[in-house]
Length: 97
Image 1 (cartoon, one colour):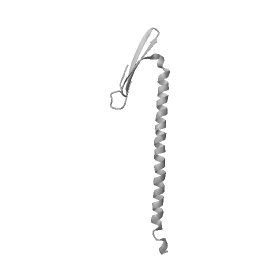
Image 2 (spheres, one colour):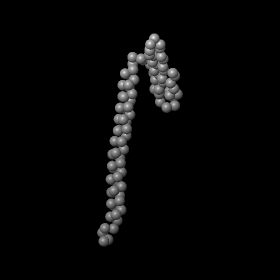
Image 3 (cartoon, rainbow, N blue to C red):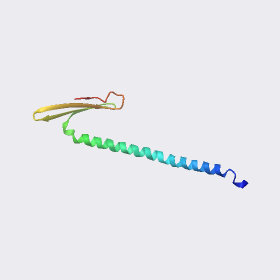
Image 4 (tube, rainbow, N blue to C red):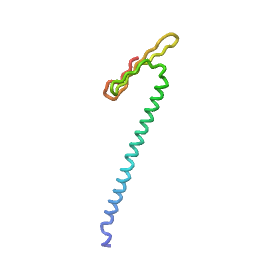
């Protein structure tokens, strides 16, 4: 039985190495799937915005901050709206109605 001494430690190291290998392969996959979901959401939002382009009165881009103005005439009355979007902390989360 002396020849098997320490084999448990070797087995534990092999199991830990296998777990690390699997995790190191799965983390980039999870990140890629998350990025893919964000890209699809951005594409959906862009498509919805483009569907209303007939109401677009103006669009200005200042770096990563975008301001959109829309107008719509209903029964001879005009409605105006403006929205600004940008990264967090850019004071872009405001919308004037």
